[in-house]
Length: 468
Image 1 (cartoon, rainbow, N blue to C red):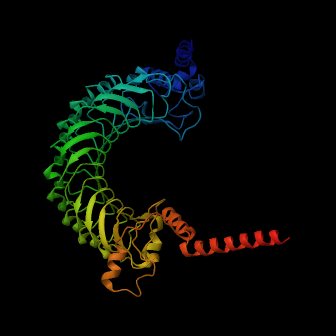
Image 2 (cartoon, one colour):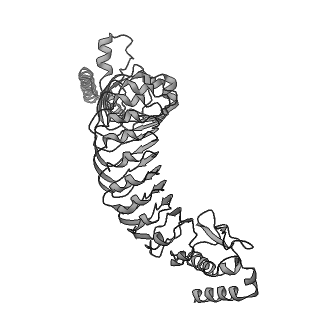
Image 3 (cartoon, rainbow, N blue to C red):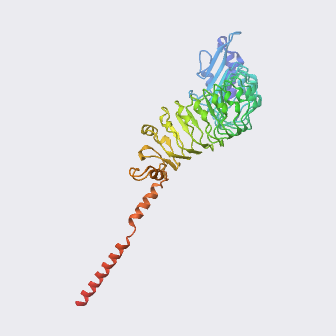
């Protein structure tokens, strides 16, 4: 009924006297009314915006004037949280009437498809030859597979289909999007391998496929994307080794391969990533060492290699990273001392070295310890020591991680102090229990004297009773 009334209104509009001043082609205007009718919870939208490109505009619709003939054409449709009125209808869907908007360059729909099942249709990537920006994001009822003809949308520069419920594989035809600059398919249910054809995306600067169920090895074609600044493939099921020539990506700023099954070691070629700021590889079975050359990546601000099976010492070269703000190497098998120079890094604001096998005496400045507070985590390093208790701030509900003797070591030799400091002290609650129990234990000699006094008292009482 709503569609019929919309059609009748459009027909009356196009055939009325105002048609003489109409500034859009008939089919395109009707197509726009049908698209908005399929999205918005406002059946009167066409009446309120009969000339959406001129006299009665709406903020989510943009137009441009063509040359021959000089009609307005819809070039942008945007539905998002910045435009609250009217809201999306419960039964919102992706109308095929979009194909009647052949000049559409940008289509962005956020948090609109929430109830009724919606799917991408193949014609969307065939007919809209001018489409440059497609962003369908945070739509929980947008499901199904990405059409296999995706690569036919040759003008696409931005493709964002994140935070939906899309499944299936990434189409191999994606390599045909030679002008694509940003690809974000994160937070879906995509499976299969990352196709080797992504190596054809020569203009790509942002690649985000995180939080899916992708498997297989990293495509060896990745290093061909010389303009890449961001690679985020975290939280998938990827395996195998990191491509040896990934270090060829000289413009790379962020690399996130965390929460996968990727093996080490970190390739030597990474020393060529001069612009790298974020290196996030945690929760992978790298089972190698922290490479010394990481200290040469002067722009690094964040390193996360937690739970990677990393062994060996913490390289002193890390102290060269003056821009470093966060370093997390927790849950590994690191051994040896903590380089004291780390406490002198001017921008370091988070240091997590917990759950390792680090040892020796800690020598961080008090100012550094106070600045980090609970963002300094050294728990579960039982042979890690501090000369003074106040020299380190550790946080643990049960087990402190500093080693400290009771008198601070002022009257003991260095060797005796070292042995005492490097003992893992017991949890506070256990020490307290032992202290209390030791003070309540009976003294045998005291018990004997009390017993003799008691017997003498009883004898005296008996004698007095007999005399009476």
